[in-house]
Image (tube, rainbow, N blue to C red; front, side):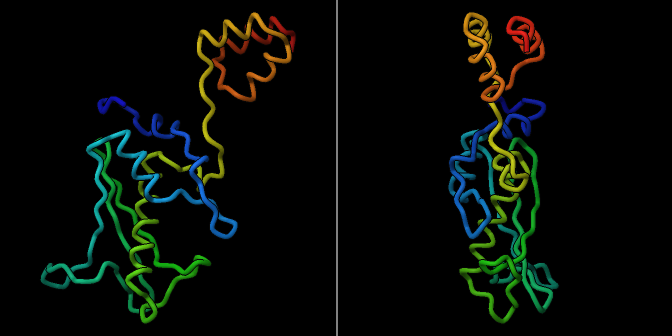
Length: 180
């Protein structure tokens, strides 16, 4: 992908991710390893940074999470195509309920960081369909495929509309030829 592309988000949204989704309860999610891999394939200079809290003098604290004294959250910055997205996520249990400060473990914090990275990567465009409940984007019908459809049957032409994104000029020609 060309780093100079003016709207990298649109290009990243086209990357198919549904086949990588896993289930946790009734929710779909994209594993952090897949999300990060897809991001680096699109922009090998992309980075993910975990933000650590600081004390009043600006010194980084040892813990990986922020707290309001009752619950906790994590923060990450994912930079791709020279754009940084700063994202936060509460530390939650497996039912997506916040975990109280006194019960937070390092494992809870690390899991939340990975989920937060996936969320920030999604805001760049990869895997956003986990939150929007969309399927993967359809591939665009190529000129060669269009020529093949125009030589085929009406049933084949109808199938094209469910499996491909058809450019408007091709759509009109197909509809006119096959009378639908």
